[in-house]
Amino acid sequence: MKVIVPVKRVPDTAGEKKLDPNDKTTDRDSVESVLCPVNEFAIEEAVRLKENAGAEVKVLLVGPDNADAIVRKALSYGLDAGIQITDDAISGSDALATARVIAGALQNEEFDVVIFGNQSTDARTCLVPAAVAEILGLPALTYARHLEIDGDKVVVHREHEEGYDVVESSLPAIVSVVEAINEPRYPSFKGIMAAKSKPLDKKALGDIGVEAGQVGRDGSAALIQEFQPRPPKEAGQKVEDDGSGAPGATALADFLQEKKFI
Amino acid sequence: MSELLVLIDHSEGKPRKVSLQMLTAAKKLAGESGGSVSAIWLGAGAGGAADVIGAHGADKLYTWESDDAYGFVTLPQVEALQAAFDASGADTLFFASTNFTKDVAARLALRIDAGVITDVSDVKGDGSGRYTGVKEVFGGDLITEATIADGKKQLFGVKPNAFAAEESGGAAPETVALDVALSDDAQKSKVVSVEKQASADRPDIAEAAIVVAGGRGLGNEEGFRLMEELADELGAGVGASRAATDAGWYPHRYQIGQTGRTISPSLYIGSGISGAIQHRAGMQTSQTIIAINKDPEAPIFAIADFGVVGDLYNVVPKLVEEIRSRKG
Ligand SMILES: Cc1cc2nc3c(=O)[nH]c(=O)nc-3n(C[C@H](O)[C@H](O)[C@H](O)COP(=O)(O)OP(=O)(O)OC[C@H]3O[C@@H](n4cnc5c(N)ncnc54)[C@H](O)[C@@H]3O)c2cc1C
Ligand SMILES: Nc1ncnc2c1ncn2[C@@H]1O[C@H](COP(=O)(O)O)[C@@H](O)[C@H]1O
Image (tube, rainbow over all chains, first blue to last red; front, side):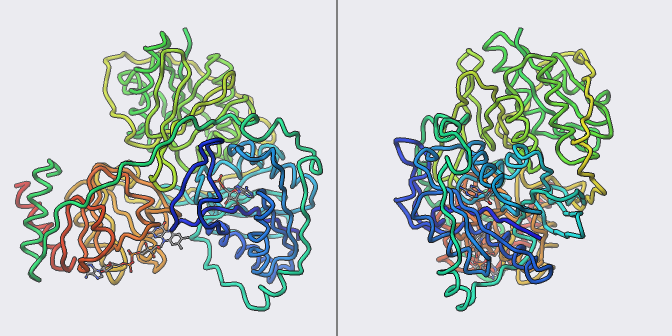
């Protein structure tokens, strides 16, 4: 079985985030970058397929040249090889344009299943996995909180607001996972050392047959025009309870009543 | 007259609140550009909802009342929406920004040459029929305004409670059955079963006006019975921090935060939650924030409009009593 895990480089949540005033996308130089934490769940699922079904797993990243550190980080979990698509034309892409690049890269690979994170922690559009599936003409079983691959069939429990749907499809297929699916392990020391010498195939748009005009801000449909920081919030009133619960509860109930919540 | 399309999100034969909110906003926006509002209902039960859909501003109701609509994954809905765009000649669709509908929008956009903006908290119009979506990014740290490139169709995923729902006195809309010939591809990924686990009488955290959330400070799963008791007293939904969902005390679908759900209720009440940045990313756009925490230094107090420093097991049971007695 062949598995591909697309991963994204995102700004560290703990840092201050900025948008680049020129192209209105994430200013990646302003904060420390990390492997998107949601992708760790996809990687863990892939590692389990490696252990249990002998899968060969590649990681795929679309991003600038120095994002190769993130590919290596992903490889340190024990994955086999990396693919990185880097091209100046890509910067400023919306989710659908990013999906065109990922789909183009996948068209040059063999795979049975592609495991995405359900979202990225910066863009959070959740659009990329389904868009990639659409471009490739494949089924997309997204928001998986449970994934089973049996022969050429895949069964997924798709999490929704009221519970989950059990869905099944044939392979090849696109899957995205939510963090409830597993508990990712940490990379081992051996894995970190081995990651340094794993094959990493760096490509540009021309190598995967995607036209520059189809991506970047010019190839994107959704365009950020303006942005501003949220006005900072002031801390309000604070009441100290005396251990009986009564003063706290009374003050709270007064506040709720004053605000017309009761 | 150009039509503004609204995909009705529904459950148990009733439109969800977000659908009526979208219709109300669409009515105002379409009016400014001399257009009309057309609702779309996929699956069974359109007839029973036509009156309320008309009352909230829809002039027309496109239906595809086939069980196939939700019998296969995503694609039947995509193909039905393609049919609705064909039948109406519309440029714009509003949909409820839920997990599954975002997949539908992504695929639809690529088929009809549209752009998608998900999770908008407002939509502005200038009378031209082109719209601007307002969206909070980076956990609410930044507010962005985005448009869709000229010449492309516009798909906006709307967050619950972005708009108020108001009746505008319309009659039941004209109903038009969509002509959907489901492709073979659309019948390949089957929905084997639907497991509904949510309590029918408690609102979902995204739609609820009030959300009661519990964290590690609850100490155990039973703590959530106390949260539910408080929630039911207020008609609230119940959410959790990741520490609580990780511990298995509450289902992951109720997790609030960066890797869970993002909510903007009128009121959020957090108990035993420290207010880590990843949690705040999912709730800091709440209008009013209340925190109950025994640590006066807990970061949640920095964004709380009202804080109680105390043991939640002392304060919350008394609060439930107070609310009960004040409601009389
Ligand atoms: C990549 C990533 C993604 C994440 N995504 C999310 C997410 O989506 N949502 C999320 O919530 N977290 C998320 N987290 C985790 C987050 O960093 C925090 O660890 C988590 O929010 C802590 O949950 P908590 O506040 O319940 O627990 P704690 O931080 O342990 O806080 C418990 C609080 O309860 C108080 N307390 C204890 N006992 C009592 C009592 N009897 N009465 C009153 N107060 C009491 C304590 O003073 C403390 O402040 C994420 C982390 C990472 C790294
Ligand atoms: N630049 C990228 N390179 C590789 N994978 C990506 C990229 N952007 C998004 N993805 C994948 O798409 C998923 C959903 O992201 P999003 O649609 O941005 O919320 C992520 O978890 C990744 O698996």
